Length: 395
Image (tube, rainbow, N blue to C red; front, side, top):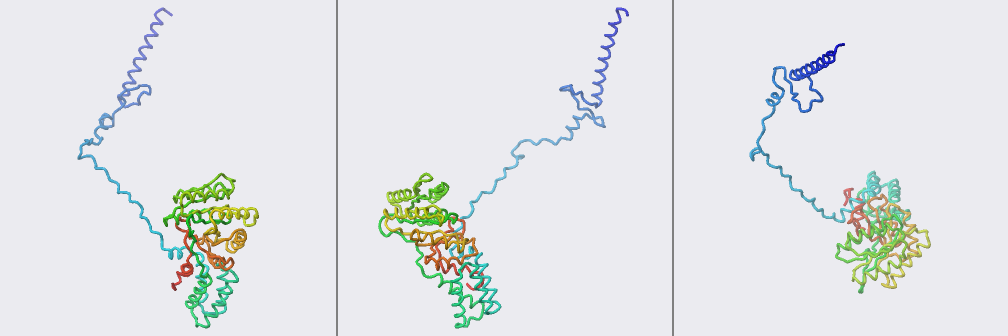
């Protein structure tokens, strides 16, 4: 090969490169695909009518609207947020009526159905079953039905309405005429209420609701967390103290409950508080040593304050007759003055009110009618009986 051959080869290569670049550029102008490596190149192409793609986009673009006051839409004002209306607490009679639905379904409906077919032996037997089912108790049921049958004969009660009216009277008499008011100190110094009961009855929650009830009455309170067996009990009581504006005396878990009660009374006296409420551990009624400890708490308080105004026993209405067995052990340990019956709204055994009073000889002073802070109410026998039958057209 001559010396000119390499030079000829290079020249031919340069010509190929130049011609190739020109063909690519020509293809782009004819709408071909852009070179992926050609940053910033004009790759718009043309449409079928020969128009430049950029021109088409410009022709079809909506005209711009200037930002003048006339073109800007006024802001949409949101409606003012109104606070929910504050509902007044339901009257006590209405609360009894609404919250005794389960017991009413067992007892009230049974009476209307049984005697709607006539005053027969079968109807009286059915009434006995309904009363026992509502946990009135066997002895109390037999006594009530026997008295009712006699009165219905003497007074000529031959309709369901007439029998029902007599039954309501008998239930009122069975509930008795106890003094259901909560006792208060007559001399200077704080009133002292000791509250006890088995775990799970709602004891600490009851104390909180009771504190709220007293606070609404304008009284100043101190709460003593003498349930040192469970740290959660003390924490729970502290929350209630904050909600009700009460002061609280508490110690570490495992501390001597009697010492907490002692310091609670000292604090209530120093602050000239109207009321001291003492929470105690949820005792198992079959634990003798725990019941003895409860007695010690009461004795320590009595050395400071004299006889306590109230020693309240909290029972769970849903436990029925079992609650009475539990209560007897507490009566042996301390002198109970009254019963607080919780969860009455959640039980079909509302007749336990009759059984408790008959078996224990103690008044039911307070009842729980719901989970709200205002759902602890003074027990009213008249409203209770009317609530059991309020939807039967005879109230």
